[in-house]
Image (tube, rainbow, N blue to C red; front, top):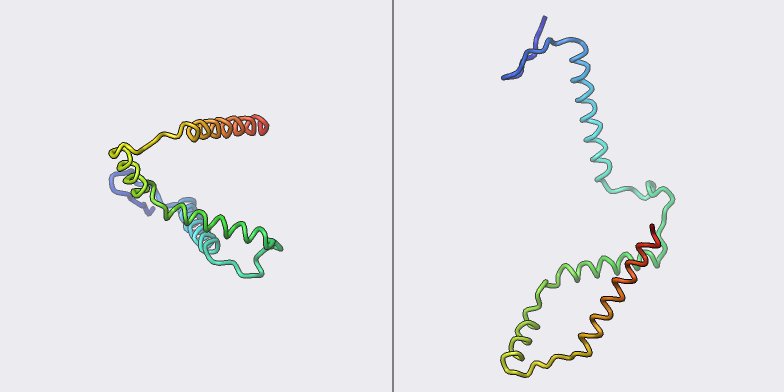
Length: 123
């Protein structure tokens, strides 16, 4: 009887069942590779399953893509604004606009409250 050995492990006799399992694994791996290749390849126009986007949907998708690119390209910290604010503070010319601060606080509070009510509706 032939045996397959793996270093540091017990020898397992080579039986038709073991050979079948090895074949099934190889077959499964090939099918998965083929499926992944198929999913990553571009679809032809005949594979669209009858779905078409309206011009408005295409426009929105393009606008979203453009907005995401702008957000990606914008630095997290605007050094020019930071330098401007530092200069104003050092010069003593920076003035706090309490009305803008109050408006911002109210705007954020309303957004939070609206998102909570939308969340409750979805439950």
